[in-house]
Amino acid sequence: MIVRRAVLVATLIAGILTGAPAAAAPPACTAPVPSDTRPGYLIADPDCELNGTPFTALDGATVHTGVRGGAAYRVEVPQRWNGRLVVYAHGYRGTGTTVYVSNPDLRAHYISRGFAWAASSYATNGYDVGQGVRDTYALIDVFRTVTGKHARKVYISGASMGGHVTAVAIEEHPRAFDGAMPYCGVLGDTELFDYFLDASVTASALTGVPIEFPARPDAAYPARWAGQVAAMRTALTGTEAGETWSDVLERRSGGERPGFGAAYAYWNAASQNGLPFLFSVYPGLTGGTAGIAPGNVTDNRHTVYQADDRWWLSPAERRLNATVLRVKRTATADPGLAGIPRVDGRPPVPVLSLHGLGDLFVPFSMEQEYARRALVNGRSRLFVSRAIRDVTHCGFTQAELTRGFDDLVTWVERGHRPPGDAILDRRAVASAVFGCRFTSAVRTGQAPCP
Image (cartoon, rainbow, N blue to C red):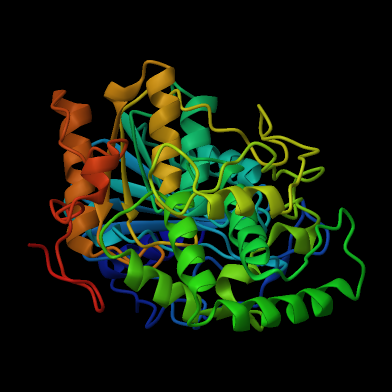
């Protein structure tokens, strides 16, 4: 284990007391070091940010940094610590082989309120939720070891894939945590990849452009897919098929809701790896394995695609469902920490979550899936969800996040369950005022609340 920052602080204090000259600046950043647990991985210096600036303590706080179990960590403790710890789980960072630790979005707020926090780089990248759970849970012991203090209450919070980590962690370790705040989180485990599948197979069916879902994509497949996407994109632009596709996506991503037109335009214009974003996440590009699962985790054999909310299918919808490519899963969400860990929807502690209504990367339907599971398991009282009127991924304001965290703390500490949005009420979600209650600022392209 490496702990440098606390040693530096002690040296400075000693210099003041003895009259010896104090260090003028924090130690220089060091190059990434090889992981001792993951061959081929490098661990970035936790004492530095990625841009090379030193990681230093906020006023009135002390920081500890180091490496444990192949993962870098940071811990920050305010001088007037309230006995509470927040462990933070970061989101997806691609498939590179250098891991690095970063600060939580609410770092300053935690310290100002007397909370300590800890964060891990995880020992791996990729969609490795299981490793994220292991390394985030390990932060509780790291905190105890480097500070000599025992947290009386522990909160966990995570964004995007970190929301998946958060949801799994509280179910795997129900006695370790007292409250959880995922945001823009993958709370529906493999349902996210089903949504990615839905987007592409419905576009194919609506445009008549044939596509494939190779179990083992060959080297030439990405180029073939790019050609198929170009043909679909042309057939969807400014056409009736494009309007229908937008309607189908709206229902597959959370239902009719305010601002979806702006969200569709935003994500349809975005690109990734040379492809329009909504096609760049097609599970067929990886054989449906998500880069971590033992097989294809997507399945749409029983999915009914609709462009409206009527109880019956129109002739056009029947044609869509008859012609859409159907895919069968060969792997499922894992009940443990292997592959893509399953989220049961059995929260043992209060969970307050935030999600953008127009997020089409990790869609609003993830919140609804978790809410349905919690309802079936009789745990609805422990889940509060708040809809934010934003089209980006994890584009929350500090005000929205701080309000959510403060309300979660009040819930845990005093038993006052905070208000949320009725995300399973289709009519409420479709209302023109949905998402207004907890949105603190009007975003570009979004109409102001009535």
